[in-house]
Image (cartoon, rainbow, N blue to C red):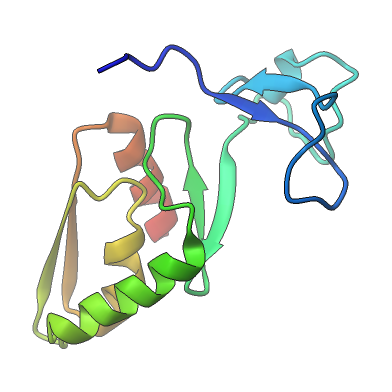
Length: 134
């Protein structure tokens, strides 16, 4: 396998399925106040980070550069709903979310179970999952 050496974000403030090639690229996880002053950012707090924020199943998730998140949110929403039905989770269920990434599966099913335990080997993913759970 090829190791991941960089994660970049392309910033674009317009409406589009993809940013134009001329939109600037920045490393994910870089503090906002270290970006060039020409970066088209709104509401950036000093020391804030360039993380991705995404909605899924009515919940909001922070996604750090090395954390896993299913980008097909429509498909993930259907899949997580079906997984909850097929697993017959209920108020007494302890849900073990293995390779939890940002916690999407466990958190989308959390309202139907007694407890969710997320497990992942990526520290940043665990930090995201904990923050996403609050």
